[in-house]
Length: 357
Ligand code: PMP
Image (cartoon, rainbow, N blue to C red):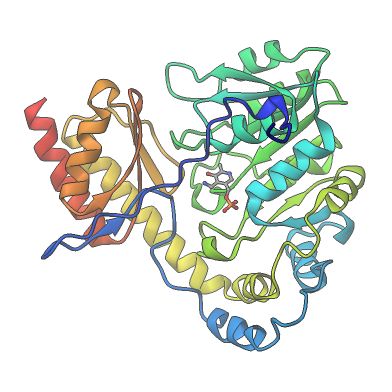
């Protein structure tokens, strides 16, 4: 007889990471499938991790003291409101462990970040996905309607992965006013630094007066530390304290902690890089639109093409041109904004594909 495993695990889709590009002779390969940052670590980061590497016979600082202090200072919040974890997906999983279990419900927009259904079902809670509206944006009225007595947590992904669309201030405030105060709303702002729309609120401002709001941020995207696994939440004390209880002990390595601190201190270089990526995003968006594609306005470091039945063909064509993208079969393709050369290959491929449609 096999060991008994939890029923909840049956049928949980496994997380599909973005594929690395196939490497072919004579073709430069680019990975535009995981919303990573194409730039190398920020100034000072390699020095910090090299210094930390000499001590990895020791456990890291479990409380992430220096990083939490730096974050508290940066966001002008009490240090007790900061909770760090193994990437923001790790912190999201902790939030579920802290709030939700069998019999409970978790509401999120769909399609959105593919980890939401997975981590929800691992927790034992039921997933309540609410379809995006015709503009590929969160339908906040429908999401508020979907909240029941059983709801414990709601994810709002802003900007939304994979569509890049945003929820604006007035709509978010209206929604939050409708959410019962005992339901935790998680504002997942993994792509926050790329937002240029002034109507999109900063979650950290929203959370201040709302004890049932938590903000999720990460060092994986704009800061370029995806491989080191460090993210954090800003939340009021009971929630942040629950996150400390549900954390994997010593989950955030000393390398990750020191790299995150060094990255926070390299703000100027960070802003330059993010500006450059935003400029590339605008260029890619405008070029795709000029080619005749319908592209939702994106505030993230990726664009979304709703290709429907052409999705896998398009992804295969990109792959042969040396660019891996992230297809969601039958729905569409998410394309990360990469280095200029990668974006050029993508645009040429999209143009040729479009002409054949
Ligand atoms: N939230 C969103 C919306 C994401 O797209 C991602 C990464 N794909 C994450 C969270 C998790 O990122 P990480 O765990 O690397 O912080």
